[in-house]
Structures are given as C-alpha cells and as structure tokens.
Length: 143
Ligand code: HEM
Image 1: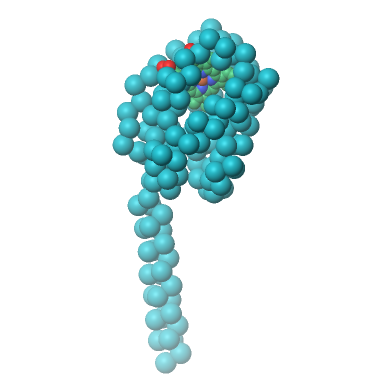
Image 2 (image 1 turned 135 degrees about the horizontal axis):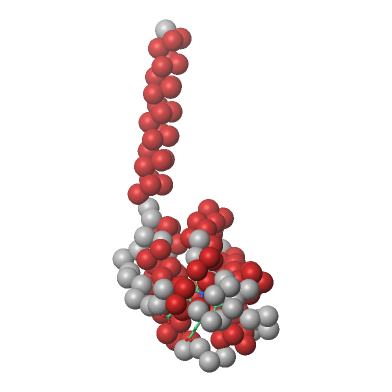
C-alpha cells in the first residue's frame, strides 16, 4: 500500500513538473517581456540613457534617433520570437567604420540594464535578452 501511495505521489509530481515545463516552453521571450508595447517602452528609456551617457553619446550625434528606436524594437521583437521582421542593416554593416570598443559596448549594455531594471524585467528574461544581444558583439565591436 505504501508503495502504491509513493507511486501515485510520484506520478502526480511528474505531471506537475511536465505542466510547468510545457507552460515555460509555450511562452516566447517576446510574450514574457510583455510584447511590443513593453519592448518599445524599454527602448525609449534606453535611448534616453544613451543620450545622457557621456561615455558614448557623442557616437550618436548624427544618428537618426526615431529610425534607430524603430529598428531596435523590430530587432528585439524578432530576436525574442515576436511577430516582427527586422528590415535594417546587418549589425556588421550598421557599425562598420565606427571602431566601437569593448568599453563602448559595455557602456551601452549598462544603459540597457538600467532600463530593464527600471521596468522590473525579471532576471530570467533579462538574462535571455542580454544573451541574445551579447551574441551580436562580434559583428559590432572593432569594425
Ligand atoms: C548589442 C548591441 C547593439 C545593437 C543590438 C545595436 C543595434 C543597432 C541597430 C538596429 C541599428 C540601426 C541599423 C539601421 O538603421 O539599419 C544601429 C545603428 C547604430 N548603432 Fe548600434 N547596436 C549595438 C551597439 C552599439 C554600440 C555599442 C554603439 C556605440 C557606442 C552603437 C552605435 C550605433 C550608431 C552610431 C548607429 C547609427 C545610427 C544612425 O546613423 O542613424 N551601437 N545599431
């Protein structure tokens, strides 16, 4: 009888575990971030941080900021599994000739983290997003 109870408990635990895993798999990062409105709010705030960051703001002196915001939202939306198509330049082409350094890249990531924290994006989602953007670093730095 004790064996049967243990078996039932085991099967129940397994079922709960599977249900949990299934829910996590179903929701894309895009959905967990809160979709396009939440991504737009973070990008707006982030560009504000960049604009007031003396370490890198000169880099953006001649930039088309409205276009940059739209491109970043599209890019994050697509990279996180959302229903968008990024139609901008490749990361290599967009940053070619800028000689962006590790320090520049780090400063920009810090400005983004400030915004993610301000909007209380949880650690899991923050890590996934930063991981996706970090993967673009070789195309951006030192070109
Ligand atoms: C993960 C990091 C980064 C991502 C995802 C990213 C993304 C982008 C995107 C999507 C564009 C627009 C491309 C287009 O208009 O077709 C862009 C342009 C640009 N990026 Fe980055 N970038 C990153 C890092 C950096 C860094 C570290 C700097 C300099 C500190 C930088 C400076 C610029 C500038 C100056 C432009 C051109 C804006 C313009 O001419 O209008 N980016 N970037």
